[in-house]
Length: 207
Image (tube, rainbow, N blue to C red):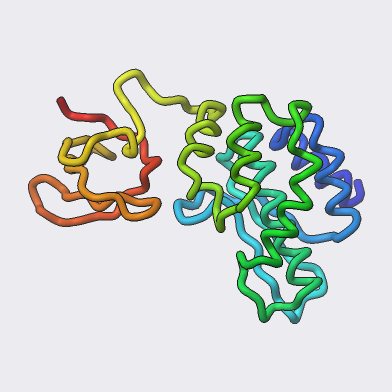
């Protein structure tokens, strides 16, 4: 089994069916090492450019649904293309990367790949892509509908809760405070300690 067959076997259960050929073509034209990583709270995927290596490495979290996996895959491949073309003395998510990401995503922005309920927020997101799709709250909420683990009846996203309301997260009780970009400053009831919690954290409101 050659490397392309190995990559096909890895990607096939991870991306939408009709995007597999495109993903393999990206690898064929610009090869890279690819690994699926355990879930990481701080990032969905990773690309690190090393000047001492001719073949670079891309990793993507294992717990992403097919559509988020595809977006993240192309996001990281865009980093590879950008650094190979422009070098490493550029901003990781600057104009060069944004333009490259937009070009690589364009063939995928079709109902053949993404359901229409995802296509609209994704097309909007791609007009000015952020450093992480996780920073686009509306897109992430739509993507979450396709997660293997869905919201339970008594849970919601922290972003949907009004400030001052208490909620449970991982067996601990917090009170929602002010929102700061993609995170919310919350106070743990009982200790008074403050924590920044992701707006997309799945929580249980306390009535």
